[in-house]
Length: 355
Ligand SMILES: Nc1ncnc2c1ncn2[C@@H]1O[C@H](COP(=O)(O)OP(=O)(O)OP(=O)(O)O)[C@@H](O)[C@H]1O
Image (cartoon, rainbow, N blue to C red):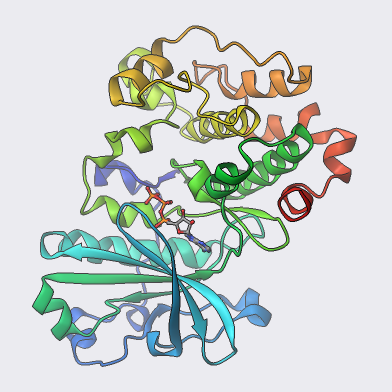
C-alpha cells in the first residue's frame, strides 16, 4: 500500500486509500465563495497543541517578505498577528483549467499533510483553499491554494550551498542522518517523496534540516503535467524513474522508496563536492545530458579526499539497480551516519552560524 507523491498519472498516484474527508473540512466551492475570509481546510493536529498557531483565517496573517519562488507559486514570510510569530505561507496559483484536478488533489493533500507530524519534516499548520476572494479569482482567471508552514529561518540547503559551496563530512553525516530519519518516517506512512533535492531540504535557526514540499508537489502536477521532465527536477531522479524500461521501473514489485534513497545520495555527494555531481561542473544540465549521466554513466568516481565510509555510503545510495540499492533502514545503520563525529557534531548549526 503505497502513496506516490508527484505522480503524473492519477490512477497510479492514489494507491493509499484515504478515508473520505469529513464534510466539516471540505467546503464546496459555493460555500467558499460566500466567505470573505477563507477558513482553513484543516487546522493543526492535536498532537502539536503547544505549537498550534491557531490560525483560522488567512486574515490572521500579514505578509512581510517574499522567501522564494517555486514551480507553482510563491513562498512568503508571514506574521501571525495572534501570537506574533513568523510562518511561511506557500501560495500555489491555478488557472481555471486546473480546477477540477485541484479540488480533488486539495482534499487528498490536506489529508496527507494532516497525518504528517515529525521533527524531521517541515510542519504544515493549515491549508486554505482560495486565499483571495472569489471575485478576485474570477477576475484574473486564477485560483489559490495556500499552505501555512513552519518558518525555516535559514532557508534551503540550496541557499546554504550557494553561500558555503561545500560542506565537511562531519556536517554531511548529521544532515544525512536527519534526512534518513525523515524518509524513514514518510516511508513508514507509505509516502514516497519523489522530489528530494537541495531546495526541498530546509534549515531552521537551530541548524536543523527538515524535508519539505512533499504533497504540495502532488497538487502542482494538476496544472503542470509534464514538467516533471524539466531538467531541474529530473536531475535528482533515479535511473528506474528516468528510464523505466532499462532499469526495471515498471516492475510490479518495484520498491518505490528506492528512488528517494538515490536522490538523497546525489544531494549528499553534491554537498561534498560543491556542485551537482553527476555531470561535469561546466556541462549544461539539459535533459539528454542528465539522462545519459543517470542511466548510462560509468560507475561514479568517488572523490579521493572522501573517507572510505562516505564513499561507501554514497555508492550504496547511487547503485543504479534499485534491487541492489541500500534501503533507508540499512543506511540508518551505516557507519558513515554512526561515526563518533556524527554523534558529537551539531551539524549545520555549528557550520552555518559560526563559520
Ligand atoms: N517553510 C519555509 N521556510 C522558509 N523558507 C521557505 C519555506 N518553504 C520554502 N521556502 C523558500 O522558498 C523557496 C521556494 O520554495 P518552493 O517550495 O516554492 O519551490 P522550490 O522547492 O525551490 O522549487 P520547486 O517548486 O521546483 O520544488 C525555497 O527554495 C526556500 O528558499
